[in-house]
Image (cartoon, rainbow, N blue to C red; front, side, top):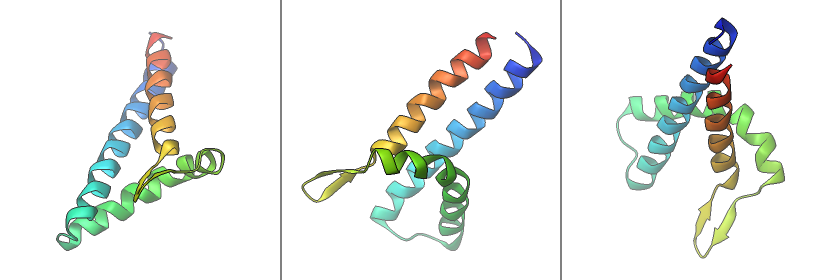
Length: 91
């Protein structure tokens, strides 16, 4: 495994963990507002992940199923990050 591949793989792992945190924090917003640090953590995760998700969202708009919206862009970026992480670690 090369150094560049390992560094890229670890960066993608950190991004994937950030996306998981964003997903959990977005789900908790549906239930309750929570303490002040939850809204601060939600803002941080959105600020770090939105520049990657927003261009994909223009191509894959959210899917509406009744009153529920499914963000296909988030799912596509998450799956792509998992695939790129596997490729980076195999370099």
